[in-house]
Image 1: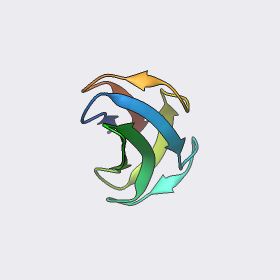
Image 2 (image 1 turned 135 degrees about the vertical axis):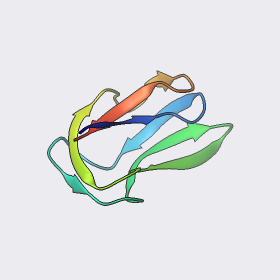
Image 3 (image 1 turned 90 degrees about the vertical axis):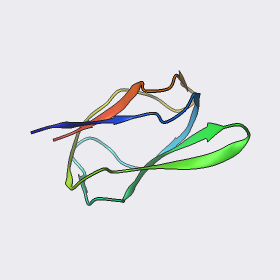
Length: 71
């Protein structure tokens, strides 16, 4: 079963900390979202494997936009 990691707020992707195929645990940092001049870490909602990364560094994202898929 896969799970979507979504942006909690609009902002820009500052850094991606994982790559496709990486094993992650719940609460691991996946990427850094810059919003309102603050760096906001985005965490894994559950254990899994990074299946697909749908954004790149410097991408502008909207609230609830899917950032990556965990399998």
